[in-house]
Every structure is written in structure tokens, then in C-alpha cells.
Image (cartoon, rainbow, N blue to C red; front, side):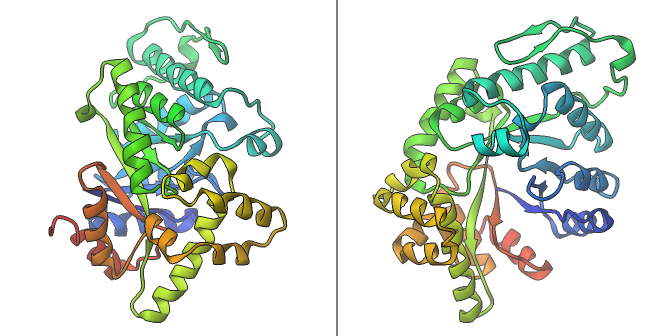
Length: 335
């Protein structure tokens, strides 16, 4: 099991932190796109590390064009010596149209075409083939030597796709190199919805599961004593409630027989009642979504639940210092 962790957004600290995290034994560093750009910390990390994977987890695809991301992905992969993984996600309509002022339609079909366009652009750069991509959403038919990168020795980066619903998951299997499972997932949903959809996508492309990677950042509750564990559990309840308030995520709650709480959470979210929303999440629901315990115990629980399914993981929403991180990493492979 590969174990990943997050990297700071602080560009003054990212390089040194990346070096330290690599030394601890992490397999990958993930930068997320929330309040800061996800690419710049990984560029800093590229120059201070030697072997650790550098991953956007995720970058918002529909906030950009395929050509824009093709250049960024290429340059980060070249700078890191082939260690960059372009993790993409769709976000949701309000953010794409109201925050990024970009078009939104048919997200699964658009994402499929987006990734195919990326691959067409990279193929043009790496093989010299003419750029001739025309789709429903994107068209790329012009490329001259002046705009073609020449540092192509490390090839194109891998592309991972984040997905919750079966259609986007199927797209991941068909056109991506890996799937980023949303942390708001249960074992039942993963096995009964996600995996069958992924297999359909892999079959479409004639790909084997062995050629594909599943990454699942598992919601994790940890602490050194009962007080810290209780505080972490309270925060996790609020996080689960936040995701559960989204109507598109109701099928995940349905997978554990808790779908009836989704309308309540949605109504409370519209009132901004974020703290009280966490109180709707019972212990049973909490334990379906999250693992909890000491760092080494988290690892054992993740392996027990998902070890036969996933290839890489991280302790989502858990704050692990250096010692706890080592315990977490070393906790894998003990059962």
C-alpha cells in the first residue's frame, strides 16, 4: 500500500517540507485546489525531492482548458523527472459557473473529452503527429514548433480522475490511469457501485485492473488521548455532514441506509447551521465513513476494510506530526 500525505500551500516552506516528508517514507505528496494554486507547491517540491510522487489531489479541470493543463502537466512532469501525477476533478456546477466563470454541461462526457484532448496534445508533442482533436466540447487543431515543448524525455504525466457517481467512475476507468475515490465513501458504496463502474470503464478501453491505480484518502480520526480523539470525532462529524448535505452524494448515504438524513442536512446547510449539522451524524454513520484510533491502528483498519481494493491511501483530515506519520506508514503490512 502506497501512503500519501498533503503538502503545505506555503511556497516558502513547501520545498523543505517535501524533503522532510520524503525522508519519513511517504510515497506521494498531494496538493489540493482550495484557497491556493495546487501546482506551485509541487514545483517547489520537484527540486528538493528525488523519488516521491507529486500529485494534484485534485486540480479543477473545468476551470481550465486542456491546452493550459497540458502545458502545466508537462512542465511539472519534466521538472520532477517523471514523478508528477495530474489528479483532476470536475467540481460542481455553481463553482464552475459562478466562481470560475466557465461553462458547465454533461460533466462525465465533458471530462472524458477533456482527458482525451490532453492525451492528443501530449501525443502531438511527443511523437510529432499533427494535432487534430475535434470534439463536442473542445477543439485543438493548431500547434506549431514555436509552442511545442522540446524537453520530452520523461513523457506525459499520468492522469488520475476523482469520481463519486458511476458515470464519472466509468470515465476514469476508460481514459485515466487511476481513480481518486472521494473520501465521502463507504465500503458498501465502494464495492457495490464504484468498482463495478470502474470495471465497465476498463473493459471499454481493453485495460486490465493491474494497469490502473485506485487512490482512496480515508477519513481518519486520531489523537494521543481520549480528549484529542473526541475533538477529532466532532470535527469529522461536521465534515461528513458538510458532504452529506450535497444532493448528488445521497446515494453514498443510501449505501448504508442513512439516506433519510440528506434532506435534513441540505436544509440546515442553507441556513448556515454548520456546527449543528454534525450532531445529525450518529456514531454508526461516523464509523461507516471513518477509521479512528492511534496512527498505527488507522493503518490496520484501512487495510482490513480496503486492502484488497485500493493501491494507495492517506489519512484524510488527520493531522499527523512526524512521529505519528512514521507510525501510520509503518502500520501497514502488519496484518
